[in-house]
Length: 239
Image 1 (spheres, rainbow, N blue to C red):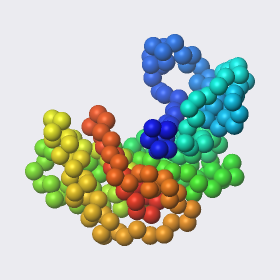
Image 2: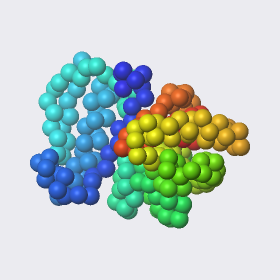
Image 3: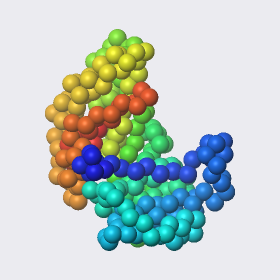
């Protein structure tokens, strides 16, 4: 977070594959309660005010220690993933953002409604958090498809639909057989999709928009296993 100037976000979920937990020597039972305790521990460390800090929780016990260097963000935003009722309740109780696990246009509205009800139960405003969705075929570019213009049009329409449904960050997907092809598709997003999106749907004022976050996100790009995230300022919606 210090190196990036305060651009780090931390993603948490409890996982679904027991073998992964076994490989790491982590107990599979009570993993939800363990995750809650870990979130509390991390925020305690990230918001330390004095020379030292300590934490005594249900699963983690940290004696008095020094935490250096401290992050720029106090604390670093924590995004919680998942779409089970338990996961959505954790988002409503503890998270700064929700990762929707690549829900498509048909499944997203129902899950979003359950999330809204969870926020109502905990007395929180859903507008406080960021919502990340993506890596879905309706916003994907494929280097093997010769009709690039049609792909760009489909991606533009898909992005508009997700923003209208409440998504604030969209992680888009690209597909290619080579690294060069992958990078070309990322470039197409920056060269073709984003300017057209800005032109068709100009930025609108967004009450409570996190301007500093949007400014930090400008012109960033990341490539990871065939997925890219290209960020641009457009109201609260980041692509």
